[in-house]
Length: 263
Length: 266
Image (cartoon, rainbow over all chains, first blue to last red):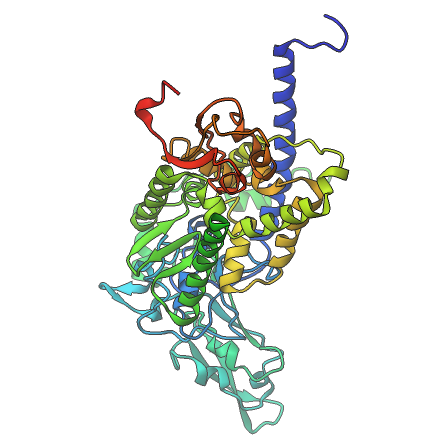
């Protein structure tokens, strides 16, 4: 083969290899941008939203929920918001979800990213079933924990005395007053954010966070023995017993075994 | 000028209808170019966005599926990339950049930067590849097109910077760089509209070979037949923008309906 001359086949293979390489670079850059953008921050989704992972692949970013919201609560993330672009979110401190009974934002969703079933019971829409987030109290900044009477969040809560309850406790410092501590009931809390909006401290002492971020999970191996429903889980449970060098003997023998101790 | 003006009227009024729907609840065209509701009843969806959703593993609802089907059939019949020149708001930005480029004579002083027209098909492939592996709508999350139309309707944020990038890319780096080389949505509609009916037709008998059409055409390759043979512009990349028709002083280019029965003779 002459120098500088290339067969068509060789040329084709080289061109393809180059293109694939360039595409690979593009894919790496592009995917890192995507990875950054979707894990950028904690954000609150409209009522009925699928979990974040499903939501990101299902939401078509049409903004119909945003248009439907009568309180301008919902916004579409624009560049600079540092949120997955084009997806709806709300900032509870600024404008919370006012829990419309007819939930106008959910039925308009064409893609099912906002699921009507998740906020319906017996075929009727029920905004109280929404799980947009969960309120978390900062007991150091909240002045109710200082002993000053404030029940702004408690009063603002649309599920009054259900999602936030007041816990009475004796104030040892003064000896004659009581604390009225706000305590969130996570099962009931919808994450509407009216408490965060109402909080009187400079930066809100009660904040709505995504449920999957805040809520823990005890795991399957814990069974509530006092709960009949939960106890049923043990019924068909089968234990696998692992034998090791130590567990061959009984626990007591194993502890009393002196071999190797005084050498 | 009449085609240019019609295109601008169509482009602007679509966005205005969306804005009116968002601000005042006018139920003619609600949503945005990703997905909308026409006359409060007919769903319309961006088929490329839906394809990414599908590949990412989302369950496609009936509304979205029908919407995407309507749009695919619409552009499949009309001319796939008519979206690009008649609907897409980025077209106004890139047209402005190209206009300025011609006026300033930037192409004349610039060393040619080589870019392949096929880049867009690679970007299209990558969109689907990344959507599949990351479980995201890869292009939709970064699409400058969506940033622009969404921004105009729902609030821009720093979206103008992205629009400026495209503007300056087209002005300074490569003529028609975004729409003609990179944009995967354009590539997608090129494929959709491969066999569309409305086509520009060249009449070689009238042509004086002034080549004005090739100067204005944003997809010059599609006009390969100019001055050579009478035939329709049959490449999917043609956006039916009608710039060539307007610039032609000899009436050698015109819109026509593709006639499949005569296809073999042409």
